Structures are given as C-alpha cells and as structure tokens.
Length: 90
Image (cartoon, rainbow, N blue to C red; front, side, top):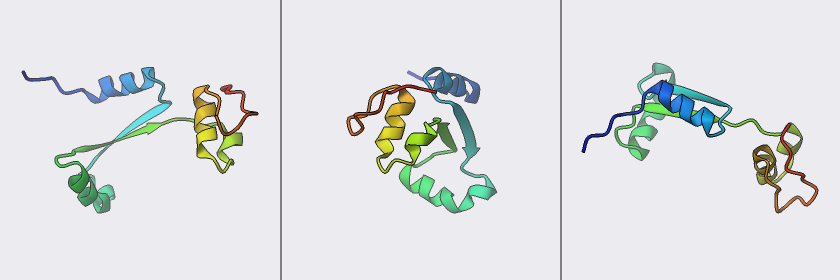
C-alpha cells in the first residue's frame, strides 16, 4: 500500500494545530547547512529535510536550573519540581 507524502503546508498546519508556535523547514542539501548534512545522513539515512518545531516558553522559568519547569509552565502543566508553579500560560 503506497502512502501519500505530507506536503510542507499540511505538516505545518498539523504542527500548529497540535500546539507548535512556529514550524520551519530546511533542505539537508542547503549549502548553508553543509556541515550537518553528514550527521543527518548518518542518523537518518535518506533524510532530505530538517524540520524545526518551535515552542514558546515562559521567560521567567527559562532562567530556572530545571528546564522542565519552563516546559511544564509553557504547556499549562504543573511542574513536580516547583510547587509554586501554577502552570499558567501567558
């Protein structure tokens, strides 16, 4: 059974619907990214595109030594390491 590949627009729309704040795409063959092309080929044989998903984080909690505090606060969940965290999203 042959599957249809996702288009850039469909993948962007899906990522944004699922909570990403921004999505970016770059060709593995882009000359500006040449030094990472070998890594992409080694780790993901046949990879043609880098996909970057961006999530905004609460700047107050980014300064925390526990990155999980920033991530949990961004997603609206309370952090188990920070009992003062309200899990609110700004």
